[in-house]
Image (cartoon, rainbow, N blue to C red):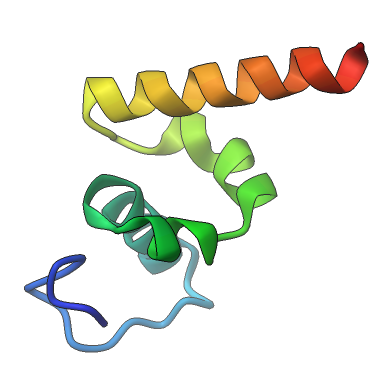
Length: 74
């Protein structure tokens, strides 16, 4: 795990739903563009309501998915 994403964990079990959500939250909060690009965007959209993200980051993702939904239906 990259230190700028998590400085407190060495290993994660990404098959464990709690640890996976925690990891995604860390990547969305502290990750770089290439880290975020490696995530599953459908999974982000699905779990976004359950993530305790900083307000600015939550707003960014909610707006992204709202705009994407609008573009997809046009």
